[in-house]
Amino acid sequence: MKQIVASAEGTRAVAAELAAGLVPGAVIALTGDLGSGKTEFVKGLVAGLGSPTQVTSPTFTLVHEYRDGRLPLFHMDFYRLKTEQELELIGFDDYLAEPGICAIEWANRFPGRVPVDALWVDILITENGKRMISW
Image (tube, rainbow, N blue to C red; front, side):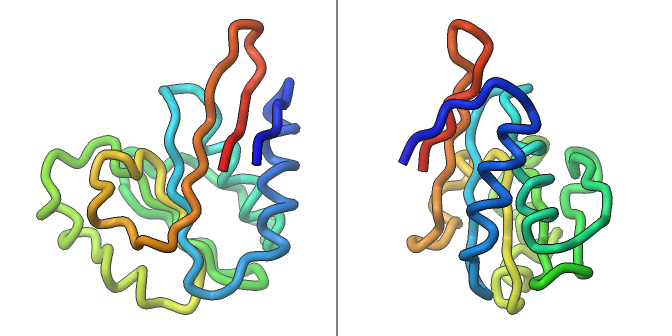
């Protein structure tokens, strides 16, 4: 699937629509350049799960938990991780075992650790500044 959006609101809307069909254990592996809209996509997932909580990037904390929606969502960011062993420090496997959703920004840094049934979502900034969201 591919969708082209012209705004952050459009990115959030695509993600909110996707969130409606998510089930416990789903993993969303996000890829895209800096500023492409990965965190905006997660904002849409969280809103689509019914959480009113404001979403921020977990770049420095590495994981944010949003437990007040239809399903809990665990928002991870692999950008600052240098080695696969650091996944153990953030409890990566524990989060995967939770009955919630894992949304992983920069999942392509450690693709071998992402479950094989993950939904890979790539966000590309187009020449005209729009976003092409593919999954």
